[in-house]
Structure formats: structure tokens, C-alpha cells
Length: 168
Image (tube, one colour):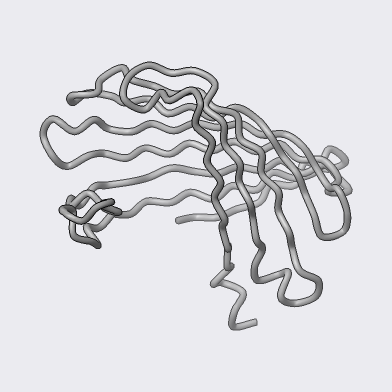
């Protein structure tokens, strides 16, 4: 999707990335555990990051909407806010609340509220302009319904690659 940056003078800059696409059925839904859902669903959202003038502090917001294509399956709305900043030249740390809400379908009104901590490593040099690595830690705080296991922890590793800069 479109990506843009807005300079805010001495206050810093705002970076926005929007996206839209489809979630494709990629696996056997009968497998144990099933790693897909067998549907083609629509998905869209955006990320925005505010960086202070010297890029020491940041605030992030994310919105994600999944439109389920099958009757009885709830749509998903995810929203998160995180604040933090630079720990060192290569490491950044942000943390904040995340929520998931089920809309319509069999799970209408179910939700979770969790705390996310995100540690980001950006390599030096040209590689750092093209990619970074992230480790997310999530802890569910509260919720209602099938997805509200309050004793649950999750850890996710992410590699982000900027395909637009690979040819430069």
C-alpha cells in the first residue's frame, strides 16, 4: 500500500504505511495443529510511527481489519499503541496495549486485551536500510470468550525486509 512520511519540523516526523490484501488458504485445515483456515479473507490496515527529531523516542499505532469470507465466522479488529525508543545504536524497545475484538459471526463481542513488548534490532550499514529483526512478547491481561486465556504468553520473531530498497 501507500507509504509516506510527514516532517513535523523540530518535533520530528510521522511515517505511515497502509496495506490491503487477501489471506489465502495455504494448508490442510484437517491437520493437527491446523496452521490455516481454508478461507480467502480480505485484510486491510495501517501502521504509523512518530519519531522524535533525533529519533531517540517513538510512538507507534497499528490498526488491522480482517473481513472473514465465511458465514458464522467473526471479523477481527486489532488495534495497538506502543511507546518507547532507542536503547543503543542498533536496538529499540517499545511497549503498550493491544486489543483484538471479534465482530459479527459466532464469536461476536469476544475480545482480548494484552500487553506487548517489542525489541527491534537493526543491523549496521546498507543491510540495516533494507531489513530489521523484531522479537515480540505478548501477555493477555483480560478478555472474554474463547480467546481470553489470561495465563497465556506468546513470543513471535519477525524479519522485516524493505523490498523497495533492494535495487538501490
